[in-house]
Image 1 (cartoon, rainbow, N blue to C red):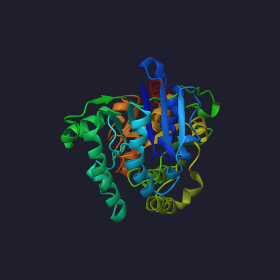
Image 2 (spheres, rainbow, N blue to C red):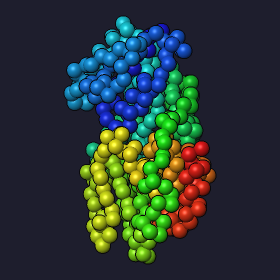
Image 3 (cartoon, rainbow, N blue to C red):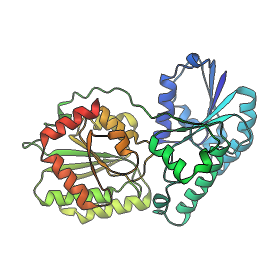
Image 4 (tube, rainbow, N blue to C red):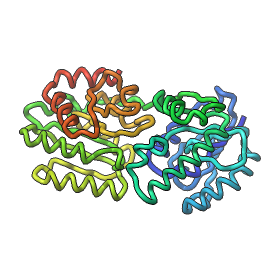
Length: 352
């Protein structure tokens, strides 16, 4: 069997990393797959591995704006898939072409969660709503749907039962690589008393990520004389970035301890897990939070949002807070900061 992969709308960030790691660790021969053909633009193809069974096809049209990419997917991909594959995998969750059969993946919770979608306004809200309609059609016509968490599957079953009524669903959670966390800077005891405790949040800056609430909670902790430093990594949307900068300005007395690094390549981001003492995750909307898995793999003590799939993923290996309450975030972090033995136990449990 020949498997085709539609990478037409995989352009950056986690989507590229996800596809890269799937292909890096794949063993297609076990599943009687003789060849895998990937159609994509320069990104992500330049970042995908070279394998004897892997055929990477760079389509110039996929380096162009969204409308051109969608038109190519709808018209040209169907012809190519018909000629060169037996099954099409659509990891981006959006497929409007005529080729059958195809399997797709549910990754974007925001377009389906009404409260989270409604955080946006005007053009962005309309974009998310149109995506919801298009992905709904994609799911209904698919021969199989991959969900990344029980939370995501249960959400579709409860609020969009028509989307999964006739489509077989398989739960396949994201995994992570094994990382060795032996840097002395990353020890949960490295900053106690004598050093400033370093806290990390890795995430794109979006309205459901709540960096501003975290920053305000950080300011309250500094007000009480707690020696901490906050590191924020991730690119973001202009509106949400403004909210974050306003929060930093509100806490200007401590702005030197609030370090926004912007976006880093994947490998550089991984290095930061070894430079900090704690990880915090105040997002309200996730399908399968890969950065949370990464922090767990590095054995960091974690304070997390109590929303979405986070309790399903982290279980009892972390502490939880209400991400929309500055007081809740502050109290949770303070309890963890003031209990080094608890941090050590939680970090060890997270890594198991």
